[in-house]
Amino acid sequence: MLNEGRDEESLGYIAKLIIKQKDDEKKKAKLERFKNYKELPLYCNLFFLLFVSKSILNFLMLFFEIVKSIANHIPFMYH
Image 1 (cartoon, rainbow, N blue to C red):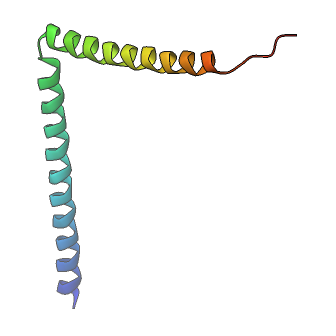
Image 2: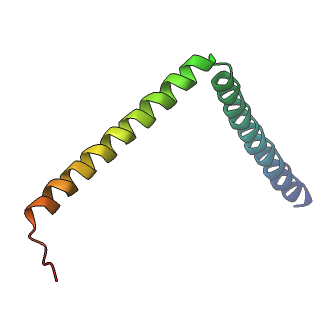
């Protein structure tokens, strides 16, 4: 009877160790991905930033063109 309790405790301890090992492996994989991202050449990051900023700028210009064309069709009342 005493032996059964110890077996359950040791199984719980082993399960905790396995879970901790899996978590450590996940953390290590995330760290590796981060290191690989940091090792990208600078021009790749700049190209991505330029592409994103250019697409956002194009979207804003299109949005303001639409607003301007709608505003031109609305008759404003002058006092």
